[in-house]
Image: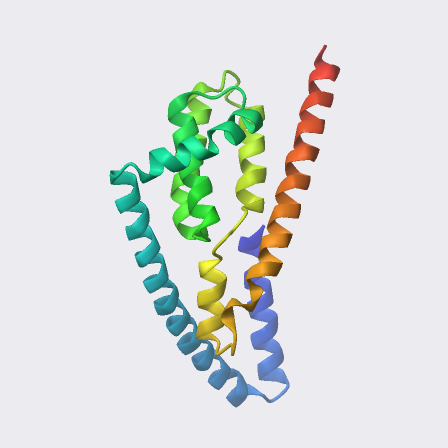
Length: 194
């Protein structure tokens, strides 16, 4: 769907710029946007490299195992039907999200989903654990929203960390609501199947 929507927006924008006589403004805004995109990418790349490196170091030490043990009771409640390997993959994804590393969490999340799909008896339908993982990964409680802070910093914010407390509140509320609603729907689905 986005493959259709974005080209339409681009064509409409360029057409309007040409027909309204703002071709010079359109041309300069395209080059300014490219410059801003490159600067933002470089800023985010540095942040991502730092935190991905820290995650790799943590993975090679016992830190991930300790954090997994801390998250284990919560993961057992939310995901009652998963094995230890998937539990570790989910906890690594959750740790990356907690640190605000959405881009670093994505490959970890894909790995966890692949492992859950291997265990899934009905390959064409998402399992309950997979549904819950999507909700948790989307809501992603963040203690250190590094990506948002980096974006705000690159855009010249006078206080890039001012967003931290609102992000804590919003992510905790959305994660809690998502988990509760998903659990309710899972129970309703099981009742219907009986």
